[in-house]
Image (tube, rainbow, N blue to C red; front, side, top):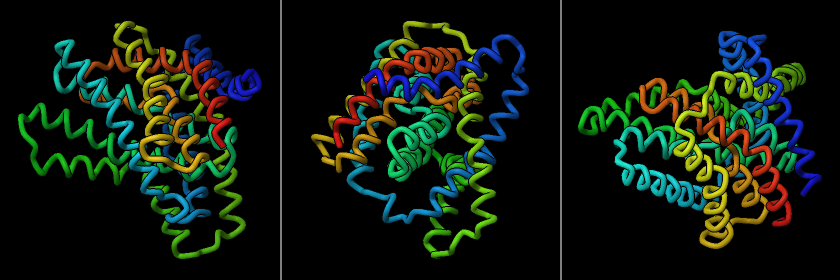
Amino acid sequence: MLEVFFKTLPFFLIVGLGYGAGRTGFFTQQATFWLTKFVFYFALSAMLFRFAANLSLAEIFDLRFVVAYLWATGFVYALASVVSFFRGLTVEEAAVEAQCAVIGNVGFLGLPMLVLLLGEAAIGPVMLVLAVDLIVFGSLIVILITGARDGRMHPGILKTVGGGLIRNPMIVSIVLGLAWAGLRLPIPAPMNDFLSILGGAATPGALFAIGASLADKSAERPFAAGWLSLCKLVIHPAVVAFSALMLFPVDPYPAAVMIAAAALPVAGNVYILAQHYGVAPQRASAAILISTAAAVVTVSLVIGWVGTLY
């Protein structure tokens, strides 16, 4: 287990480096914004396209995998929502808290880290988890918040959701990569080198950007944020493990990758959505900060354990 901790530690050290740069003012909020934009639209997109273009839909898509992950994530989403309602929160606040409880930093942290730690075969399962998070739960929070504000569901919500998915570079990169693979087109050497060099910037850039973005986060409402961090780091991977290993048995290796992906800390885009809609942004911010700090230990423990499954 200590060996796994030392393997994950460099990733979190880069996050810590970014946090220090942001906290001291050496890396401003504006600099963080542009770095994040570069990683999101260019480096990470290049990495995802290159990965997807070397796979096929048959290699990525596994219905039992999707069902196992959806059931487990839906269960934890519902649990967090029920607890929120018991605390007297609105539908909008409950939607943000539920999002914190189940949406991990799969794109910026999980994809580069899990592929390096668990092997290149993890690419397919990680991308499948990412796709489900973005398409299903990324759409759900928009539907719930917009529907609660309007007092009803209407076709305009679907237009908003669809537009958001079409404009998401991670979804676009995966779809284009799979289309390229489906057409059985070879990737020319110059293009492959271009994608490799640009995609290589995704890992350090994303990790540094995560840390720098945490510099302006605060741990307000620590009890609520602590509960949400517990959901994300402990309850979510535990329920995913039960679902993937017992309820809807998935092959050991993809099940291990799924569990590891579920153990990742709260994603930064939850805060972006909370801030955009003006719903509990401080709570989301605190959950991201606390869960990322605790993940230094918890993610190592989970990855060490799932390594014994295959």
